[in-house]
Length: 395
Image (cartoon, rainbow, N blue to C red; front, side, top):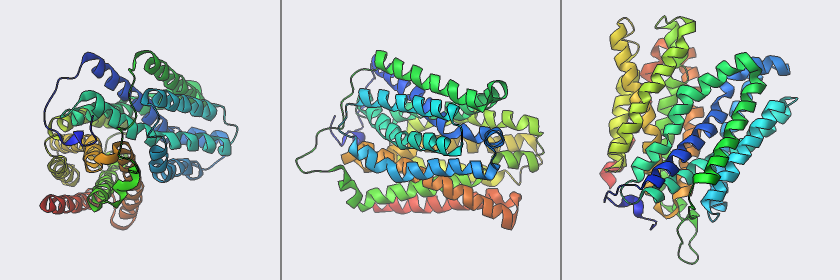
């Protein structure tokens, strides 16, 4: 496949083996993302066991995000020539070992090392899996393929993280990490048995380097747009549970079910993303940002009416989930000369946005109160819409 294949519009039907391969990428993504975010539900028990404050244990989350942001792009560029099947299997084995080490960690320093190792591999997986899925699906089906890979993200939020947290109540936080290590090992074995040989990045002209995309101002604009989009998304999403409990008066024991419902609805977003992203990623981004802004901004004024509040959350959930694959495809198209590196840079930008959104949301709550959070997040979404319109006008 040529490096510009993401721009083709001809649709082709993927072969059954292609569907299986993309399904394996999604299952791998489920294991990888659950590894990243499962710790959120384990922090209280983990902190007690290791003699730490919850805030101190929470620095493991910061370590993971910063590692992804800083090391993902250079590692992906360095590994771009490695045959993909072997690379994917190696990454899943690294995650299996990392989770096993987490389960056995005697102190915070060993646990931090285990998390650091996993964080190094995560962006390489997402960047290369997205590119390989597009290669296997064929011209005009890349957006469909990436949205299917990103079902792993939705499944992790809906099932992986809640079930891992529930399992910790039965087998402890170490047991949850051990189970996750077993899952990663199983996925590696499935990829060894069923994943076809996937070539490395397409050949380039002599002297051409992947980093050439970093000189493209249009590409950099797409990466920055992703950071802004994820800032808008996580300004409110980080505190959704608090919003439901404190403002919507949802009983604490039921908040988890509401969050699971938010994720289930989000699965519709994956389908929507696959349908609209191949036509025009920027226009798809604009539409989804409008839905996101409306959904987040409507939560507070609709708190008194349950069915209207539910409608706002449905709109928010669909847009939130759809923006994950849409941003990935959009950045990969802009960086067609080095799609794996482009995809990894998008993951780094997303992690920067996640960190910024959480910080800005927390600051907004302290200054303006929880009730204003949806409006603040809506404002960031509108800023992202303005940036998207400016980019559309320059095309």
